[in-house]
Length: 118
Image (cartoon, rainbow, N blue to C red):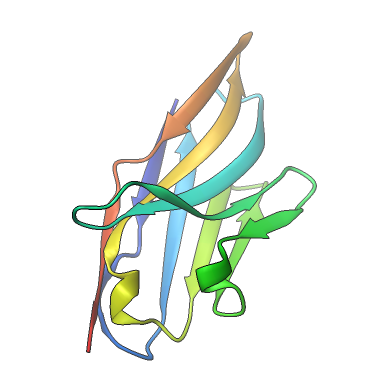
């Protein structure tokens, strides 16, 4: 069972990017899914999370600009990022609480770089 991210890249300030993260393998169910980020020299922080019932939670710094969503039929979580700022530059990691077989896994993706130029 693994998470594979896509969608990072270089964008100018004010632009948009959409990140995707797909879970694959023998998945029974997925509880919460989320996105974290880590900028150089800083600790990893939560950006947004979404539960299995689509309750969402956002970091204050991204509220109103970022939107998290999920497609349960595809075991995929998305992060739509609008009005990007240079301070949003970081490696973005997806995270999911996955049940496979009789085991629960706290999975992390490999990370995708988002760079916002001024």
